[in-house]
Image (cartoon, rainbow over all chains, first blue to last red; front, top):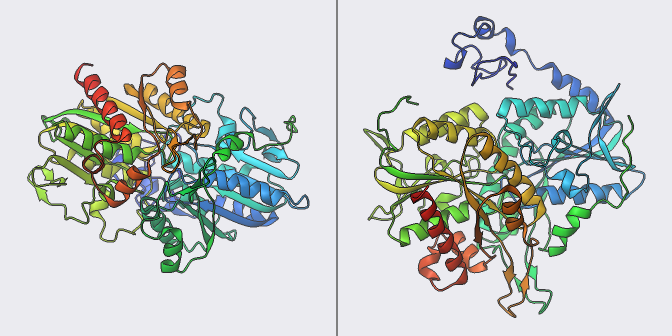
Length: 294
Length: 270
């Protein structure tokens, strides 16, 4: 884990990294000796703080893919809504895609803001039992770009887990960006003392997607993250006029089904391409917006 | 990473264009590949630098298999798709022993490799170097831009979007990235722009409609054109076939070629 002080030199490897005090970026830094002595490599206290916070969260599910644009956020949003349709369940959706936060738009929560209270940041409630948090709520304009390197993104994710007043939850769904990098390592590491139930992996049928998804599966195996199963999205398109099915993203290598057989994973299901999702995603919230509690 | 290169490995590369999007899965790698093939088809010497370290798609799309990357005095020799060396490639995909191996690196390590990719690949003479990027506005994008700028070598960026708001919403942020970093926006391309059913020719707007043009208007950018959803293209890409050779008369190729020619005009006459 890399903690970067705000006044660190550029390319600071992080005070807790193995390279702390030893890289060329460390030359001349006033903390160089402290870092290279090993004093800064103690485990991040945030991990225990987060574990404490997560004691009131029964189930934690990560939604992953190696590939971008396969429908992670769409699936996460629909899963959150489906779980929250049982009014006795408390559900939350955490969006850790720091550069491309899609969840506010998909949940119909654009323009909402996060409020601070004594017990931390209040997430935005789209329904009484469905809370959402995303960096999207911290940006003041739809044009704002989050041009952050890895360490700063990690810090944000730590805050999302530690400082948001999640309350008691039955389910915490975590939507992630594509890849196997800082965000993914951080979410796994910060939740390492809190049990993650597992990951749902999203793919589309074609090999160009599967080749990235296999890497994500390897990542899960490397960090010992259980895989609940795989969802094949954009699986065929039924023409609304003639009702014939076209494989727009063709499963040239057997699609998710064959990959799951080969890697001994569960295929949770297939979701077809439906133009209504593109429109509905924008209007997914059915509840009129209310002022968040201060 | 060398600083103050005199000449250096980009000295004989005439133009460098980044292919960006804020959004994943919009077709950056597909369009990078197709634009490269279209430019080659019109007689240009082209290179592709793939800086998507976690999900390198370019090797498969050009079906170069698992070649070895050799070193020469000037650095790494790029992988060529043919004996004529008309299309040169570099990707982390070529450096992995196992294609399913995950590259689980944090930012600083990605930054370091991208620095090497920019300065230590012996591209030789190229008319255009296209740089395929992962989605986002983070380490890879900062690294590639900073390193290219050290060699004063970046004409600008093309931004790819799909029509729907979820995509243009991210691309707006990428446009801000370009403005903040002083990267010229050469134009916006709308990909997956409608699907014509091969059975009945009905056009369905699977990913909604119009977002690319609206985005261009909203942000004062040039709209380069749109490319439809075409299963023949997606199959070609899957199989690493040259779509232009296989389907030279298709409307999709015509759209891609038009974008390639507009791009060429734009970078040759800044």
